[in-house]
Amino acid sequence: MIKKYQHLIAGHWQGDGEIPNINPSDTNDIVGLTTSASSTEVREAISAAHAARNVWAYSNPQQRFDVLDRAGSEILNRAGELGELMAREEGKPIKEATGEATRSGLLFKFFAGEALRLTGDIVPSVRPGVTVEITREPIGVVGIITPWNFPLAIPAWKIAPALAWGNTVIFKPASNVPGCAWELADILVRAGLPDGVLNLIYGSGSAVGSALTESGLVDAISFTGSVVVGNQLAVAATKKGIRVQTEMGGKNPMVVLDDADLDLAVEICINGAFFSTGQRCTASSRLIVTKGIHDRFVASLEKRMRELKVGNALDPATEIGPVVDQSQLEQDCRYIEIAKSEGGEVVGGEILQRSTPGFYLAPALIKGTNNDMTINREEVFGPVASIIRADDYDEALSIANDTWFGLSSGICSTSLSHVSHFKRNSRSGMVMVNVPTAGVDYHVPFGGTKASSYGAREQGAYAKEFYSVVKTAYVSP
Ligand code: UN1
Image (cartoon, rainbow, N blue to C red; front, side, top):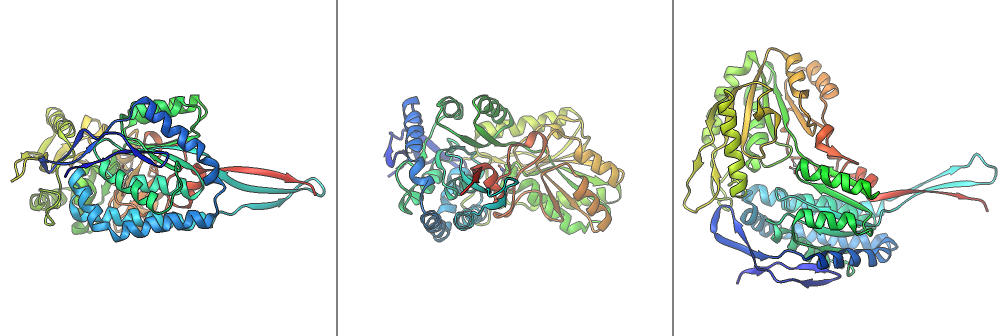
């Protein structure tokens, strides 16, 4: 029996699943049937979150801890099964998908603890006899819009802090990963969330996004996705005085210096560029290599790329899963063609056939590029990376910073002075030293600079800057 994924509105599952959700590793496999919300259903979800806001805002932090902790335990216990669902509906290799499910459980555990750790300040007033109390309150009703590439972790790192600090939520996942979203909502409801505190809505991002900004009942919106949509949403939200946080693209540089450990640098670049099929906004898509190591590095990277096993995400031997869908595959191939036409030399990048029909693409490396080429300016969001040769560290740094994005950046080097200089002068929100640009911890801030991110940081204790509001009370006895 094919599972039907329904909306969750005010504690009720509703809507008729009729839109097939296809497995990108095997397009004959229908993972589930999903639905798309009417404008009435979106309005009902927003009203439900609004109606529940006081119940949850004034709840005991022990209650919030218990719900989030129980949800975290269930996700950890079911990580294998949830990883399998994710591999099936998104195409992430089973090992990485199970790892992501585990990370999502840990995110709920971390934010369960944060519910108990909310503190304030008491400050003596400059006025005699008066005391100033500084506390944090929930912001209220939060719209959460998430992408398909991390179908559990990104919803978890937005929903868990929203709930921990007493907010109610309207959750709109990407249309091609309804199953993971459904499981998350089901787990949270069974963990004891009161009706209306979390509402799940499937549907088009633009329709739900504009309903959220126009309703007058939404206080904040957290979004991860494309630059175009994120910027439109930020403008619309700001006009209405809605707090907004957008996490968008990257064109992340990985600098490899002459003094790098060659084998380590190759592994770091293989992981950063191609794991998760390169479908991470933190992927290393520009490999900037200084001239003394350039030829050796490229030769080893090519050798390692040829060994990568591209295949069905459910096969435990698979290292690179399929691209998520046909339109993403076309986008990846289009960028490879553009790179070729602008003078890049392409290694790999062929469409592959496997025993099941799917969107299989061999990882592609574009050699001999410069930073002005389209392939180095625009985000591809696929298993495609380019090599840029640099004369020395100074040139490598300036190429790394020459981008309108600023999410993650990395350096492979054994030189303390270059590493220290890079940490300070790389214009990105996250700097990785001898580790891949992608793959972040769950308890520390995440976010970028420039066109990559707008608004407060996500994750860790820093997430409270977005999910709570500071109140200053002056008290005279
Ligand atoms: C990671 O690299 O572990 O959409 C997370 C993305 C990012 C998350 C990356 N927001 O790819």
